[in-house]
Amino acid sequence: MTYEEQKALVTECRASGMKAKTWCEAKGIEYRRYVNWATRVNRKAQDKSQQWADITMAIAADKIANDEIKLKCGKWTICVATGFSPTLLADILKVVDTVC
Image (tube, helix red, strand yellow):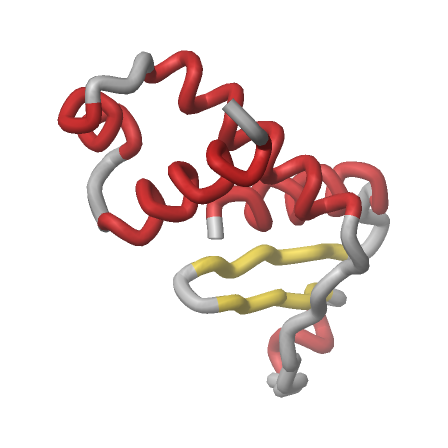
């Protein structure tokens, strides 16, 4: 199966609104095989240029005192405090990117 065919199936699964495992069962596709396809699709997407979301910065007086930044995107909120690990933040954002 070509990459384009795998990508089309991954896209179809994601658009279905079903859990991947349930979708695979309905389509007669081995779930582990689907996970491999989705991983490959995600990696190829990451190889492309980064996409950035619009950010609105709102500063609350209590947050300035705490030296904390909150990143909100949809239902996700990531709090970053003074002394954070940039590597950890990058890893978290990669995980969130694969989920969203």
